[in-house]
Amino acid sequence: MGIDKDLISRQQARDLAKKASAAQKIWAQASQEEVDRVVEAAVKAGADAAQKLAEMAVEETCMGTVQDKVVKNLLATKILGDYIRDMRTVGVVNEDQEKKIVEIAEPVGTIAGITPTTNPTSTVLYKAIIALKSRNAIVFSPHPRAVRCSCEAARTVYEAAVKAGAPEGIIGCMDTPTMEGTRELMTYPDVSFILATGGTSLVHAAYSSGKPAIGVGPGNVPVYIERTADVEKAVRYIILSKTFDNGTVCASEQHVVTERVIEDVVVEALKENGAYFLDSSEKKKVEEVVVRNGGVNPKVVGQAATKIAEMAGIKVPVGTKVLIANLSQVGPHEPLSGEKLCPVLGFYTVDNWVEACELCISLLQYMGIGHTLAIHSQNEAVVMEFALKKPISRIVWNSPSTHGAVGLTTGLAPALTLSCGAMGGSSTADNVTPYHLLNIKRLCAGIKDPEELNFGSATGTLQRQDLEAIVREVLRRSPDKCLQEVESIVWETWKRLQESSVK
Image (cartoon, rainbow, N blue to C red):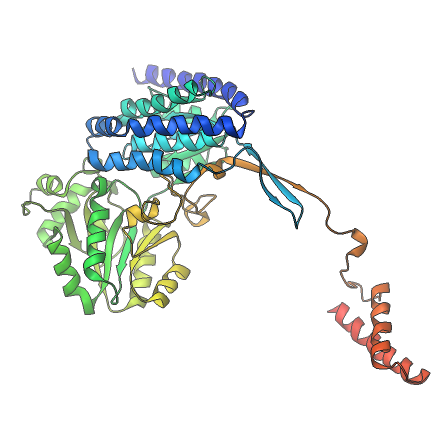
């Protein structure tokens, strides 16, 4: 039966990719006005369906909360639509009159869109809209545990796009996804580019497909509360961020790092905001539930703190929002020091910002390199030290990490693909936008004649320009000197220029 399903999945991937490729060739000829009209229709349809899709996602995946998934769906439609509305993606998109360079946008082609179970509908909406805006086609391979809601999200924007003038087949979604089918989609000749959001092995498969790809790895986000921080505000933001959709966003905080001089204040503020600190025996029980086989147990992903406590067999107060474990090390011997896509936080205490800096680097290097770090501080010098030294693509300052990283509370581009840069194995460190799905051609006119170029004398032999320089020097310094004196000046100048050219 498994083999039959793989065969069906592979054939579906080929069929959808062929249809999308044919549609993309038509869509590539669309004008900016046509593109904008289609995108507006897709944005509106997705936003109108935000509530329905959120409910479907929670029902099918049993992860997260409806109200927060609505926000993510609106981020992927209305907020994204506002951000890209005036973005030019057709023909000439930029012109530099001084340098005489004209930039011309070309779509990359047909995209394989790999989407996760944690953000199933919002990721589909977002990737479909940025693909349409950049005149690309896209075929989705959704997570097997989120097929129904993912396909419905794809159908919603697809039907609106076609009704507004996009060609049929421009968006496709596999309803029988398997790993074999996903590999077939990623490697199929008609697919030009891959946008992969999912587990580490899947992202690695995307990068190994032989196609250009942008992927998103794990985000083991440390949040540092520095001694000058507004502690009450910082803690409130951290709890808000960590509980958003029950921690399913990869940019959510995973560890609180703070200093001993404010530790008591931070701990008290966390407790007042719904955090429950585990004792040593409770910590062990939570470890066994949250971490399985070196990774996060899928059964805890996107679950409420109270449910995780119940699964671990411990009692916590009613209204508990986050479980916190005191940690002292980083690595596999400290199971909760990795990424946890649920409302569970690690807690570390250090003496000063220098120790905090090193600890945060260790956490990122263990799991989360290149992704995101959050910091709460009023000391701009310390913040800049963190920004300069951390191996991450986003430093969220005095804002909830989840909301800040995806562009809800910061000026970053609204996005649900938060790439991790070369340090994280990706080709970009940006929040992905339609521009990342374009090839930019450059028409460049000459702005100087080759005869005007002067590279000096690489061989030590004086050129005409050198002799002219000598004459100018003589005229400047010795307009009334005798011949012998002029010859002396020329000789000195010649030696100086020759020594300079040799260097």
